[in-house]
Image 1 (cartoon, rainbow, N blue to C red):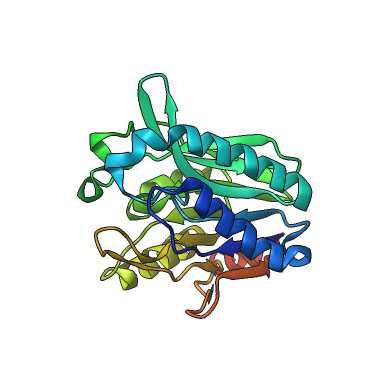
Image 2: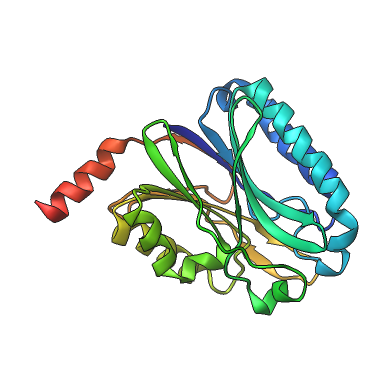
Length: 249
């Protein structure tokens, strides 16, 4: 399976500008981003956490969602990301898997809302775990604060998940915690973990960690360095088998 992570400095409350930045990064390396199983973007990459403006940005998010479908088809590559979505009177932090042919195949609504960022004041928590089969992997979806709840990942692992894709906005000074939790979820479930995290500062001068990475089932890390904006890599199911054979043989 061949995948990419794009790490962004999100412009607060500017969905179209953030999408344009994604397109610029991809257009400069179009051939490298083509024909991937999926490209992962950070949590709420269109808006950031300027919650006071969220309700005014929902229609722009839907427009970006349509643009992402079109780009998926042009690249023949999938996308995984989360954006703010409204359904009736409720708002969700919703993670999408868009297939390489531009179809929304799976969604996941963030289960564990992060009270220090005031998510609970606007968002409705999701109630279901989401996983799906892709290119011989079983892929599970999760969002940021979910990392602190190992039982969620264990349930998906017992259902066959061997690749977790986590989108995040994880800030300093808890960067070491972020990487420790991500590595733990990989090691304890004998699975790959892909984390796409925001970098840079927000409107409240909160500084985000970056450290977007691919972590193998043994806990080995390949991450985006400070001077880079993306990582493209290939992962193999044989690494999952190797880890599980080593532990259980």
